[in-house]
Amino acid sequence: MPPPVTFMETIDHLGGVLALVGAILALGVAYILLVNFALPRGRIAQAERVNKLRRAAQGAKDKPRRFVD
Image (cartoon, rainbow, N blue to C red; front, side, top):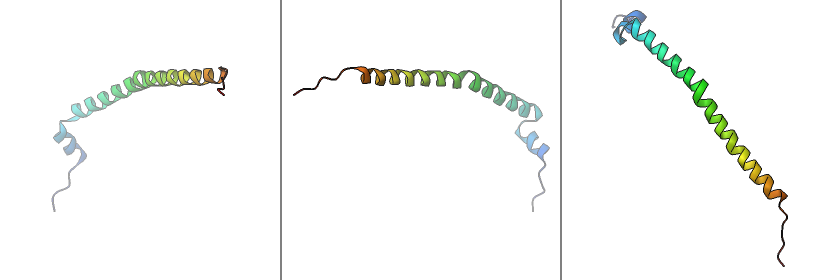
């Protein structure tokens, strides 16, 4: 049976504590950028598309219909 591997041995094998801190910081910055910039822009664009479709549908309801005999 192989000897048990500790958490610190795994961290050292993957690049040390500095690499772990760097990865955590990189993920944190990516999360902040995503939440503050990428997602709101997508929601605003989606809301504009929905409003445009609603206005088009409302405009079609208000138009008088001409029936052809």
